[in-house]
Length: 64
Image 1 (cartoon, rainbow, N blue to C red):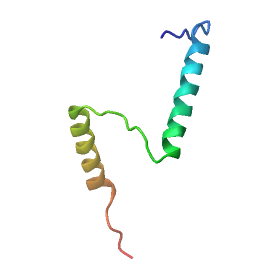
Image 2 (image 1 turned 180 degrees about the vertical axis):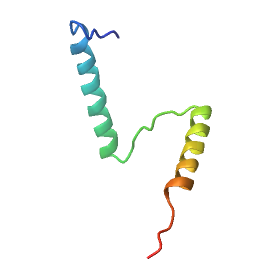
Image 3 (image 1 turned 90 degrees about the horizontal axis):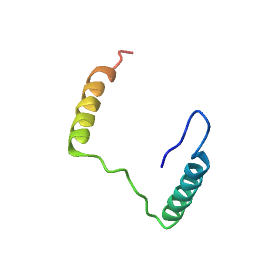
C-alpha cells in the first residue's frame, strides 16, 4: 500500500485498513485476547540490554 504525503493519494485506503485493524483488535480484547507485535531475537536482546542499562543509571535510592 502506498500513501503520498504530497497529494494524499492512498490515504483513504490506509485509513480504512487502520479502522478495520482497530475494530478487530477491539473484538479480540473484548474476548480476552490480544495480539502482541512479533519481536525479532536481536531486537529483543538489544531492548533488554537498553532496559538494563537504563535501570542501572536511573533508579537510585534517595537518602531522606
